[in-house]
Image (cartoon, rainbow, N blue to C red; front, side):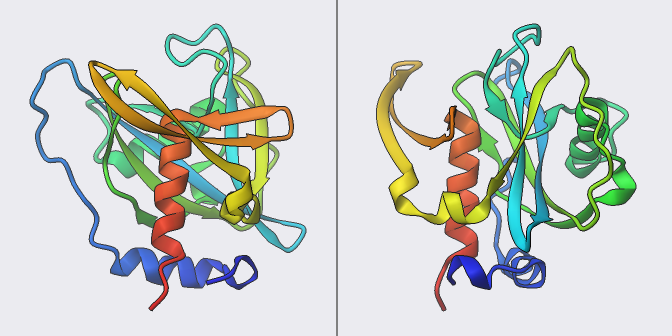
Length: 195
């Protein structure tokens, strides 16, 4: 599927058919369950991913680019609720403005998080109000940018004694890498599978 053929309807159908990998239990009590919203926004007749640049005041992943999201609270009914709640807290995105399209595979990070990425579509983007303590900037990156293989690179890194392949996307003056880049790559793998 080429970049111009991406539409919300097609992505929803693909995600409905995807057999996702769910991690039911963690082997360590140190693992933190978390969820992120993978927001798709239509801008200038093209789908974009909404990303945030984290401030240097947040507890973890200072200054990095991420999806809106965070650790699951006991009050959250499921990971979708966590992702929507966190997006509202971080960037002022009302839950009612997000249409959930599907959920990607659970993703374990070397930093001790087990993340569930929840894909949502925002048809009419409201005025966002980023929390200045958590979000330094909101980015809108065209999906076509990520699909173009010339915009991707990998590096080998060691984490917890394991050699890992780490994905990077260099967009304008920003570098999107680590868990966020890996989740984007996984999302692209799912939605660009050819029949």
